[in-house]
Length: 104
Length: 104
Length: 104
Image (tube, rainbow over all chains, first blue to last red; front, side, top):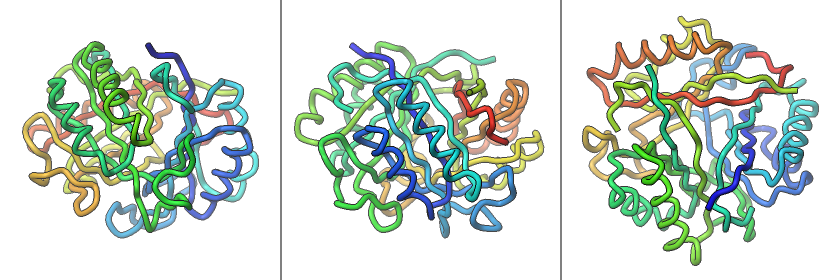
């Protein structure tokens, strides 16, 4: 028994992690997952001149399973509007299926 | 040439990683990927009072590409039934397309 | 305002990270994300005899949001053809929705 849900993924600079989780919580989501990440963005290298997974993780990937598409859109738009003028990042949505009993 | 497959994602406490991989292998899956994660769950903070990606990774994110929807459902249901009464976690499914030549 | 895009995911040995990012850049993609990973593959254990998320991350998970399905297919096929004969790995595609304003 699963039901559809929208996962929001935000990849951005570690510096703004608290601001991102603040936006997520303000939107009413009760949980999220954070993973350390490196990489390269479209505006040039992110964080380090050589992306490395060993020495340096200048980025974070934050994922939120949302209760509604509206919540997903709100988080995505807030993050883009408030952070992506000054910090590099990308945000996108994925459709997932969650076990019906899951609380989130 | 790709074919559709179901990816199972399990995010839970690091403590139960061996139990999760045991359930995955018992279901007949031959591979999985593990990533260290932090975050916050719906039953309160996961693992640490302040989610951090630098100092502490109390959680793990485990991903399995399954050969069939039945295998995906079995893994998801077993993990939820056996572990999520006592440990915080979430599990969800995503549709993916795998290169036809891939063995998994 | 979102638009559909294809995300390419490549999970392989850390040893060939530079070759993977070279293939991604040669295909014209301008950004990618790298996450350290452990796990087990279908050809036996990957990297370490006991997968561990604490001590050892012998694998990497690389994600690219592509501008077109053609670019996604090209990256996937190149990676499989050039690297997966000699190194363990898997590559798959996921449909995502990106904010229309995003540059990638």
